[in-house]
Length: 464
Image 1 (spheres, one colour):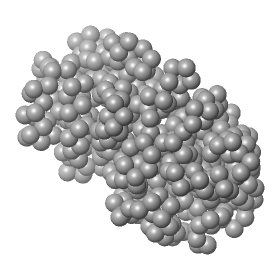
Image 2: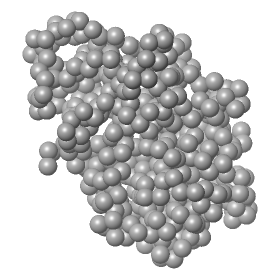
Image 3: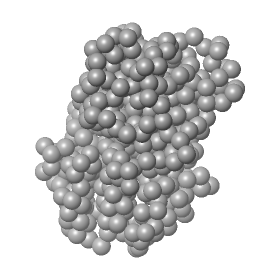
């Protein structure tokens, strides 16, 4: 990268109307599962991202882009780093942050032993506030700028999450969890009708407020009565045109699938349960999908649903293995993103999930390239959430959410990357090493809300 000192202002954290961020820039523009790889991304070895009022104004080679915008000030320059779209986490539970890393067993025993007692604490707003604060620090330090997140039964858990998201200005999706049977009394909704009314009230409060977006969230079929699933489906469908989501779990483990079959004997499959209650649609996001029949993939494709690959969680709990090559079958492709699934997942890093996803594929002789992996972590995740027109790519008009990946986060990593040629070779090494300090900075709406090397690493968008 050639030096252009006259364009660089160091030590400034103000956000002018128009500013530039300089470094190696990588962004995605097409799905490498279905297109020639060379047509799927743009890479600028010395690039410049121009940002104005929270959105991408322009991106390209430094010399060309700086000439096009004579009033542009370069506020941040990154040596030996890659600027890329912020990561998109398509499935996780912020309310399970306090129990991440708990000793596992089967999925259902793990839920009863750790998950439900932890989530019961979120009726206390102060506990929810504390957890939300810690959660956002974790995901932002890992370069995640948008996530599709489970709260839990209580309105307090939803309010705490969205309030903290507002402070950072992040685009987030969440909602009250609907669950009125087969779980402890302190966590169970008292009635299907009241629970869905409470969800609708929270939707009215939060959906479309700034960058916040709401999801109708039945936990999974076994923890909802027929009445609750029916009302949830009605709520979801009645607000589809407003961009409301539906978010749940599907086909994660063998004993879970057997339980669903016993509870819903009239359904052809686990996926068919959700179809019968009107819960499949273009912003339905199904987590896990490890043990799918072909008819279920076809059903998800026909309804335009998205799916979340959660490799760390599936490995940790010994569930099935998500088959990305089935999800991306060109005959009936499904929009596919990556999920950390904290707290079944053992870390908050989407980048580290890519390392786990590669291993899961290799168990069945299916290799996942870095190009395909990082696509799923950015633009592919955005497409899974039907947000590819706003996030997931560094392209003019998109929201300026970006992660800065350090190509020399440790002495060993810097030395190892000397032997890697292409940018994707280097990124593959970093995802495989799984280091915890790979993200140097995170931008939300053009503001640097996380800076690894700053004394005060995290900064709210409103500076309070």
